[in-house]
Image (cartoon, rainbow, N blue to C red; front, side, top):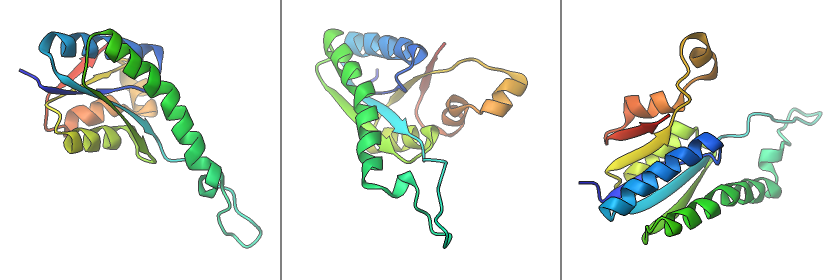
Length: 149
């Protein structure tokens, strides 16, 4: 059925539910798992007196800090995969992309045949104001998406 499953996580409590369900499915199917977390672009810049960007995102610490944050999410996720009996698991960190773009690009690069992610299930004005990366993935994905709430 599915042989390579991509599970998206941001390290939140809700995403942990999606990770758990995705790992359960992968273990039952004997599927390979890719776990992805995406660090969205840094939105705040600082400018010097000449108008040149001197922001944190241009500093050497930026990538190091973002990678360290991603590893705090990915390392426990990989450990959970191994504990769930998933032998073949690969972590992925996508830097400076919006979540939907990073998830879709990773699914394509990995040859995933199923995406697993969570949704808060917001509606109306809340969804419009906050956006929905899950809705974006659903609209653009070329492979099935399992949404956990």
